[in-house]
Image 1 (cartoon, rainbow, N blue to C red):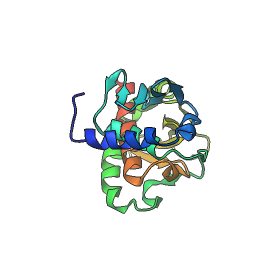
Image 2 (cartoon, rainbow, N blue to C red):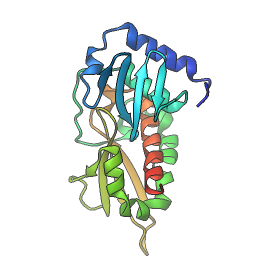
Image 3 (cartoon, helix red, strand yellow):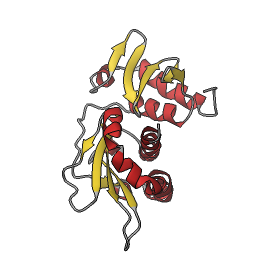
Length: 202
């Protein structure tokens, strides 16, 4: 990906990361220090962070995913991920301006594909470090995934029947907002949903 209007923002995040103490980031599960930065898995793909940029699947990413990874690194904290109770996006602080876009770009885009997602969910688990969710009784199926270290998402699905249309709901781990600003969390969910669709149709 060529440089975009986001390039300076990404460089700013990374400059802050590498100007400070990176020990907390290095302690994140799934993050591996390298001579010039860190390696991790982001949205199911190999990712590398250095002072030069964010590289996903071996290519520089100057788009929203690059910003998301930069935000994760910049806001590294020692807290551990607490998965439950799962929280709706609208329950997170300062989420109101983003609720409509979240619904459209994270949840509604999945609705036409619910049946396909169900048949391919094992592929989703393998790629996005996921598993069945055990505390979501009443739905047709559900699962949790880790698109980034310390940030878990729980997806809850209902398949269409003669009385109701299909639906998809995305919930956040209880303390997800400790690891990412709210606008970044909205983007995490959007790009996770896009990754799910890429996986089930690859």
